[in-house]
Image (tube, rainbow, N blue to C red):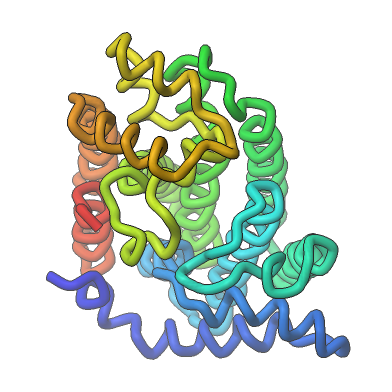
Length: 320
């Protein structure tokens, strides 16, 4: 089943969200407006808004309320990507020049800040203190995760717990918040809210691990950037940690630096792909996916539940 078919009944609502996303980043400054729209119009799966909408289907669903949460979460995600690209000195995102590449670092940082601010402004229209507490805590953890990623660059002695803690903050908590905040905005029962949050967390962990695997197994066309980019930038992901259990591969990984010739990184990617590391990482992702699917068994059975199940399975098993 194609990804979009898994939530096809949300199409009209997602169209509203796309329109609202563009409206949310309008600014008096033409430069700020263009830079803000640049990433949003480059596409993306809109995973977070989809989870917001599906979680809200377990309660009193009103798209005109729910869209504010969905757009806010997607804006936070977009802002974090713009900041990420500055930190990583990335030229390409989704097959197009990054904001910092098209303009410069200063424009990118202010654009990211502006989008963050607009997301918070939108959320003020949701009169639920608990939602604001969850969102603010999530943003704090997201920022800590980004700082930890910077501190951990080329720190080859880190362990799997360090990695899991980092992706929890960097990815999983925002997806968990998407599920929980969608449920809160729709007045879903408290215990269902909590279960949806846990579902989102487990899916988010599986999602990021698969992303880190695809950085080695995907082609440049599929990735929208050269394969192995994370390792070249010093981001030590789960496949790398498992690959380092092989002493000969470990020696090569320890030599990685940002100016490493492309042919050397390509040779190392092949070694990692041929090692058991990829399947070991997939197994960890699969364990998180199983936990996510088990939670859905405890939730009311409806169309949203079926969609969440299909999307989770897609996320956890995608080859690309």
